[in-house]
Image (tube, helix red, strand yellow):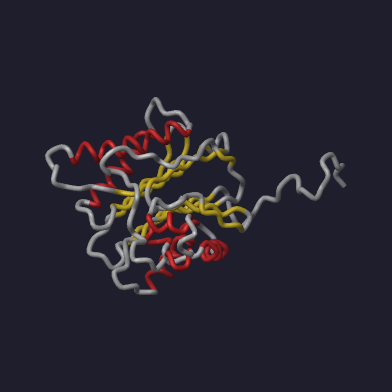
Length: 262
């Protein structure tokens, strides 16, 4: 794993992250204090701490249900703080989480908001999350193209985030997903992914020798653009082995099952 965060052109950094290991495997957690809300930095800090704590708890089980519970506990943490001594503070955050059981070679993930998770497998880039945003709903409804969505004035208008009034429904994968040697995962905030097409991220991966190289290449690209009011940009890279040494599938679809080895 490797991680990177930068305040961009903002006065402060409202993103936060945690990465580490617990009794059941490795975790990567990233949160983005929602723009325009007070105490965004505190919201993201409280969120990642609550999620990481839950994933490392003694009663944790490597299940989608426990992963969902961890995000709901983060949401409850923000709500409790808003209802306490700092009731005037409105704390909101997005979150994305990757949880890996390396012994069983499985992964789980979840998210709320518009922080994203990508997977790169055998040179193919897959976006594993769907943004909780007004613009994404418009794209799904066929009212807006993906290209126009990036320039839409409401592109940062979220439909769900931790700390909002009422409940949240984390988008958790239904069951553990098999890892493959050479898989690479990228968790990132909107200040990061907004500058790239998935293939651009894959091209940077192909140039990298380490997860740190990969993040440095991408961050350099974003900062070199010197975008006015550049948002905070934060990412975590997770490599399963070395993506540059892709494992070839044991059986190819073009080879009949049972064909004896040469």
